[in-house]
Image (cartoon, rainbow, N blue to C red; front, side, top):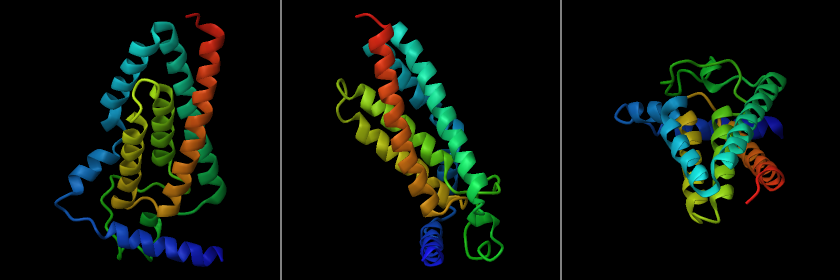
Length: 189
């Protein structure tokens, strides 16, 4: 059963990856680059500061740093534990796919880009929901675009992304509640 699931995962990867064209390659390389969304994160931090104040922002920055460290390190534990090669590292696939990423990496299950971007989206979306009710949906779409970029550039299978996104939802929700608890406990209105 697992072998069949992985076979379908590979087929879906090849289909989605081969939808790309050289016309769009640079855009997707920018989207998948880690530092591309620093301005978005800065805007989200500004919104948190604007709505919650400086003391709260300090707590948010600490909690966000812990959240990203948590999601990133758990991702690495899974990658080393499952040792599923990335599609770009599979000799039988490299001739059938488009590989445009800067580097391949060794293992891909599950995606750190997907888990980190979704955790940030859920955390910011839930935290700012009382003030910007539709922001969470915009951030989720942004996270899904980041996740798809990993297929486009040839470094992750769809299941890597699905599991990463799911873990990101869990991580973002958990750390949102941790932040809210800390605000109630240490920040006086």
